[in-house]
Amino acid sequence: MLIGSGIIIAVLLIVGILFVNLSPQFGGKATKEEQLIYTNSENYKKEKFINLGNIKIEMSAGNMIKAIGGMFKSIPNARPKKAIEVQKIDSLNIANYNSKTRFIWFGHSAFLVQMNDKTILIDPMFGNAPAPHPLLGTKRFSTELPIEIEKLPKIDAVLISHDHYDHLDYESIQKLKDKVGKFYTPLGVGVHLQEWGIEKERIVELDWWQEVIFDDLTFASTPAQHFSGRGLSDRDKTLWCSWIIQSETENIFFSGDSGYGSHFKEIGEKYGDFDFAMIECGQYNELWPDVHMFPEETAQAGADIKAKKIMPIHWGAFKLAQHSWIDPIERVSIKAKELNIELITPKIGESIELENLANLTSTWWKN
Image 1: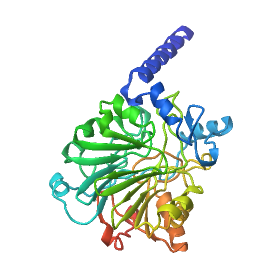
Image 2: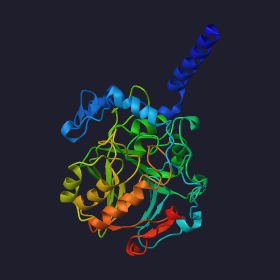
Image 3: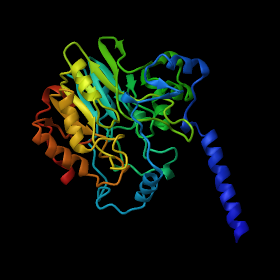
């Protein structure tokens, strides 16, 4: 029996090592030349990227054990009792759209944005599980997307906030890459895209506070408080960020993943007021308070950046923490009302027009 158990463990170990080293899911590694470029960043120290104030995103051994144990706990209402129904949109509706700025939420942090006759994707994770293999992740709350990747028309630009699996998905990128004009990422994330067959000329990497002109739009990479890594040995080898999209008349903020910190006020002072802000609200836990915001902090972040209207994101698609699936939206709704912040809560797939945000305040999750 001991010999049999040993053989099984050895086989699993070998399979695991082969998977980590051979699977394309884990992305690429920066060359020495690329690492040398990163040294110009104030956020890169000792061959790793860091947060403002050098805030450490580390868990003690005890908290790590608690976190692992929590994965096996039964959480009431952790998932919807039935699959979430999404509103559908067809490819012609997207391809022929030439009206005012609009957004379509795919759940979690994925968006399709149409602005100034351009189609942009933000953190296009369209896979069924945020993990290097479906067996290692939880399934999406919905059984379908507003539109399947294969049916998407030409995409002018993709913005990526960081390299975690729930934001950067290998299979999604493989299906998208030939449709996309340019990819915009924080420093280092481009190495994954290059590994996956995207030409370096189509990738633009930015440090915090850097801006780039995209035709008649401006993309600005701004700070977030988080971490990065896709494998066992690449922790913080790539940068993470929030994004700002500006036209001559509109100012949009996307938080990416972030714990609450002083950077929100800095962003508000430099770039506010914002017409619309998509701010993370979900996958929080007292064991990692600096990595993700609690819902009350989401509302406060909206006030800090001087947003006219905010939309809670990073919820509604996956279970990645030990709270009920509706806890984020219920709690942020209460705090937003207390702070007198306008909150919008559209359904997944619903067309969100920037000029008509006032009516998007349904409580669809209660049904």
